[in-house]
Every structure is written in structure tokens, then in C-alpha cells.
Length: 326
Image (cartoon, rainbow, N blue to C red):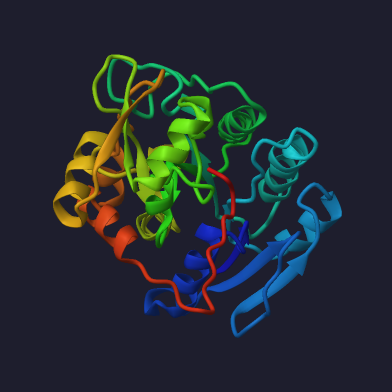
């Protein structure tokens, strides 16, 4: 087994590589990482190839002898590079895979931006059969094009592939900074879009956490997944015949309720909250298919995600690094 991993140096990629290289059940697997802007030192069973995924020659070299592809490389709201990575890069990977004499499985790691996460409304839980409704922006468009391109290769060429669609991925103390009114806030929504600069400064000084309210006036419910649970799902899907030409939602069993978050922090950390009215929609990314088909279940629930994030203490050699702004 030779597994090509794109996006190997990112938040998910690093945890995935550690698992592939350390878990006994994958002791027979060799890993090849295709790296572009960042790299890592090679080690036993890990080979590094440098170059752009948009370069056909680089992709064909990276695909030589590969049996399994785990494609995670992406860019966020960057119209200058999004199509090169998500369209051209995906195309070259799929073209090399479909004619490969060794290729066995192509796995795409997608995102809930293709169903609009909290921007687009749904009147029922979002399943793998729900209509795609990406929110505005090049990132959501690029992830939608990846999913559709993969599905077309099922139809046109009959390849064995699957897509794992995840929501916002948390690790370490990420969720603590999701709730910050300070300059260290991680991800969206940017508070300046919803409250005045004066209120933001005051809330930060008072040590308050946001209780986000959705468009119906109830606490917002938003989907998350912990990086360890996503990696567990990837490994459950890897070389699994049940995944053939399938799409799976990979998320917590229920969305995070900001009302419950505020209550948890008041109880365990004596932190007060403040209501923040938003135009967002509460949605539920249903993971039933993944739990049934893959035998996978997330281990990180709301209480643990909150508790772990606020208790996390970083070592001196572990500076906070924001891979993408969220």
C-alpha cells in the first residue's frame, strides 16, 4: 500500500500522518506527501515530493505506483490560486488515478461550505442527498467543483472513490479562540460585522463569551468536528470497500448549541455570556450514514470540546498556528 497524501503539512494532515506511521494496523503502508508551500523532513516509510499540484508533471511523478490517494490540499478565499489547486490540481490527480495500473481508491476530504453551513437555510437535517447550496465566495465554489468532478469520474470512468465532507475542524485550544472578542479571535463570524467596535472592546475587557443567536431568535447551532475524529473517519474509510463511490458527512453527532456552550462555561469557568444577534441559520449535518456504513463515531462531544479547549496549555515549542482563518 502506497498512500499519496496532499495537504499533509496542515492541521489534519499532520495528525493523519502520525496515525498512519504509528498505528500497527497501517504498519504495511508507505506514505508519500506532496508538499508545496510547506514541507517536512522525510522519515522511515514517509517520502516527500515537492511541487505544485497544478503542475501535471509533478502530479504524475507523485502518483507513480500509488494505490490510495487522500486529497486534502486546498486554499481558502484566494481567487488567484483556488482554481489552480481545486480544479486543475484535482483534474490532474483524477486523470493520473484513472489510468494508473496501481490505483485502488481516491478519497477527497470535502467541506460543509458546499451546503452553506450557517449561511444557507435548510428545513431538515443535511444528509448526503440534500441539495448543495454553497455560500458566496470562491472557496465554497472550489469545494463544490471538487465534489462534482469526483462524481463525474465515477460516471465516466467507474473509478473507486469517496468523499468525506467535514464542517469546521477544531484542535487543541481552537474553540476557545472561536469565542474570543479580542484580536486573537479564530475564524468567523468577525465580530466587527455584527457588533460595534466599542461593544467588542468592552465585551473583551469584561471577559465575556458570545451567545450567538440565529435568524429565528434561538441559540445558533453550528456543526464542528474535532481533528482526531476526522482522522479516525479517514482511517475507517481508507481501503474500505463499503465507501465505493459514496459521500459521507463527518461531524459531531449533533451541532454545537451556543446556548449550551454558554451554560457550560458559566458552570465550569464562571464565564458570563452576552447575546449576539446574527443573520445565520442553525443547521444539522447528519452523520448517520458514516456511523452506519463506516462503523465510525465521533468521540469529542460539546462538553469535551469546550472543556479541553479552555484547559489546554501550550508548550513553549507549540506556538499557536492558524492554518486557515476559519
